Structures are given as C-alpha cells and as structure tokens.
Figure (cartoon, rainbow, N blue to C red):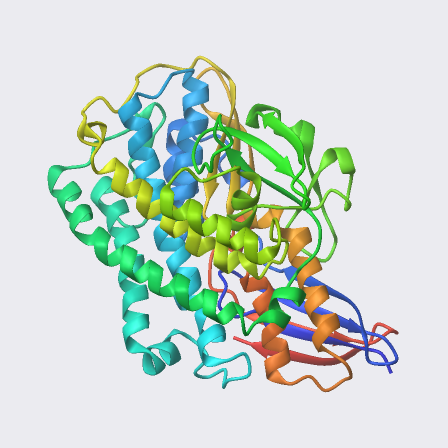
Amino acid sequence: MAKTVVIDPVTRIEGHAKISIYLDDAGEVEDARFHVVEYRGFEKFCEGRPFTEMAGITARICGICPVSHLLAAAKTGDKLLAVKVPVAGEKLRRLMNLGQFTQSHALSFFHLSSPDFLLGWDSDPATRNVFGLIAADPDLARAGIRLRQFGQTIIEKLGARKIHAAWAVPGGVRSPLSEEGRTWIRERLPESFETLYTALNLFKQLLDRFTTETEEFGKFPSLFMGLVGKNGEWEHYGGHLRFRDSEGTIIADHLSEDDYHSFIGEAVEPWSYLKFPYYKPLGYPDGIYRVGPLARLNVCDHIGTEAADRELREMRDRAGGLPTSSFFYHYARLIEILAALEKIQQLMDDPDVVSERVRAQAGINELEGVGVSEAPRGTLFHHYKVDENGLIQKVNLIIATGQNNLAMNKTVTQIAKHYIHGNEIPEGLLNRVEAGIRCFDPCLSCSTHAAGQMPLHVELIGADGALLNEVYRR
C-alpha cells in the first residue's frame, strides 16, 4: 500500500517547514516536497513607510541575516537618491558583509551541519547537535564559536551592534571603523585563519568517506546565478549578474538587477508559502537555478586572493569540473570564509576604512530602485517604488532561499529515492533527507518574511493519498 512519510519539523535550519515523501505501492519513493508552512508579509506592511526606514525595518526580517537586508536596502536607497556612494563608504559596507559571511558560514558549518559529519548520520538525535559536538570535540567546537564571534564582532565594531545595526544608510554608512576596531581585527585574524584551515582540511578528509553523499545529495545539472566583478572575479557586494550552466558555459552575463524581472520569474505552488523563482528564458520548472556559496564559486572565473583561489582550483579538480552536488555547498562555505578573511586582511591596510568621507547626501531623485547584494545564502534583491515624498508604495523582496526552492525540492527527492525503500524508515535515513536541506542553509524567516524557530514535520503518503505515517520534531 502506498503511503506518505512526513518529517515535521526539519531541524537545524532557521524557520518552519516540513518534508513529505510520497511512496508508491511497492514502497519506492515517487516524489518528495519541501513545504514552507509559515508566512508573514513584510513586503505588505512596509507600504507607507519612508524609504529611509527600510534598512532598519527589513534587517529585522531575521536575526541571522540582518546585515544582508541592511545592505540590500541601503543599495536600493542609493538608487532612489541617485547618488554615488563614497569610496570609503563602499569599502566599509564590503567589510561588514565579509564579517557577515564569516559569522553566518561558521554558524552553518560548525553549529548546524558538522554534527552530521563528525558524530555520524545515524547517531542519537538527542546528541547530534552542537552540544554533542562540544562533548565530543570541545577544541573544535570552541574554535568554531570563536570564528563566528570574529565575524559578529566586525559587525559590532562597525555598527555598534552585532544584530540589527542601524549603520548602512542610503548614500553610504554612518561612521567609519575606529582605530581600536582595526587593531582588534588585525590581532584576531591569525586565529581565525588557523580555525578555518583546521575545518577545511578536516572536511576534505571527510570527503573521501562521503562518496555516497557527494553523489546522492542533490547532484544534478542546473543553472547557477551570482554576482561577478568586471573581470569575472568572485563578488559579494557589487559587479553584475551572471548565469552559468553545469558544464561551465556562460548562459547570460552582464545582467543588471534593474532588469531582474526580464530574466527571473516567480512561480507559486499550493503546498508551500515559499515562491519558486526560475530563469525565465527556460520557463518553469526547467529554469531551475541555484544561488549561494556553491553558485558564487561556479559563476566566477577566479576569486582574486591567493589562498582561496588555490582552494577553488582543488575543489574543481575533486569534482572534475564545476561541482554540481549540493553537498559541496559545505565545501564552498569554507572556501568563502577563507576568501573573506583574506579580503578583511587587505582592508585592514586600507586607509579608507577609517576615512570620515563615508556618506553622500541627496533628496529623492528616482521613484523606483532595485538593489542587489550577495547574502551568505545567495543573491538578494530589494525592489522599492516610492512617491514624491519618499513613502514606500510597493516592495518586492527576492530572497536567496526562495531562489534555491526548486533545487531544494529536487535535492530531497533525490536523497529520498536513494535511501528510502519500504515503509519503515530509520531515523538516520530521515536525517539524511533533512541534511539535504541543510546543504542550502535555508533561512525561512527571510524567504517568507516570517519569524520564529523552525520545527520539522515529515509525512509518508500512500499512492491513494492516504497519510500512512508521520514524524514530528519540535
């Protein structure tokens, strides 16, 4: 008899969701769906607010991604003012984003995903978490916590707060980095590099054991999208948009965020509050594309820093070209932390980071603007329309997690088909399905503009649509 397995809640991710796995009469997986079941409409209740408040408002969509929204909102405000941000202001924004990449990627790797790698996919779920990791390897856990703290403190040194810093504003930023802050960052960089290399070398060793996961955790052809610089280098703040396919062919290049509606469509399905963005020229759902760490490393030609470029070449050698396995998102995060640390180190020797020329002043000059920036989880768009007084008339936010929605669903389906055969499903197999979602490190509070902790609900549904089994995890 066919049935459905339900995983609810999905653990160690941010937000509320469940996974439904549909089995046929023979107990084989026909399909799997990743449902996002919570919704709060930030786009709607921003209407009527002054556009100058948008950085502060949208930063509060999420406590994990506030810097990402802060910068995207500020860049959209730049468009409405029609100003050029001072060089120092842009470099300082970049520094904050590098701190955000460091702290967010460290959280994802050490706190959320490494318990699977280091404690085992089939280990007791009661201890398969950061506390179990602390008990099993306190030195590694402590180093991971301090690496995340390094990124958070960079944000604090710039914006006076680790979370929801009201610092980036339309036209630039409010203040430069202090000399005290620059000294602190310089002193902590060696330790941060050491921790990163420990994690990177450990993960590369684990890859030799995780050959099945590498092949089955969402390995499929798709497009990849991200920002690149004028010479094709890795970008996280400026540059232009590029699409590349799994074979390495550039499908579209030199795209502007101002025209995103011409190449990104947003589909909806009745079983999820999360939209399904797709590449318009290929239609829905054939226009599946991925964003985030793996996509950024796949769309760029090089990173532009010595150590990170060396690691990028090794990753591509291991994959035999551009990696298409979603399991390589973890690998890509570590390489991006390395790139961030190298670029932070460069900025510490740049006099502009302590310059007072950090903000351009102007009034409303445009009634519509689109800002784009790379969040740790992928490309983030803010699109505002305002009236002559600068009051918001309409908002559209395209979030990285939403752009990965098609890929996340395809990933959990592939994993479920490989591991699940029959009606009895051990905890370790369900954890592997969940782990497919953790590859993408989704932020569902951002993607549906919701707030709160995400539980997991998994359903096992028969061919006749009957609910045969379900698992709740709160």
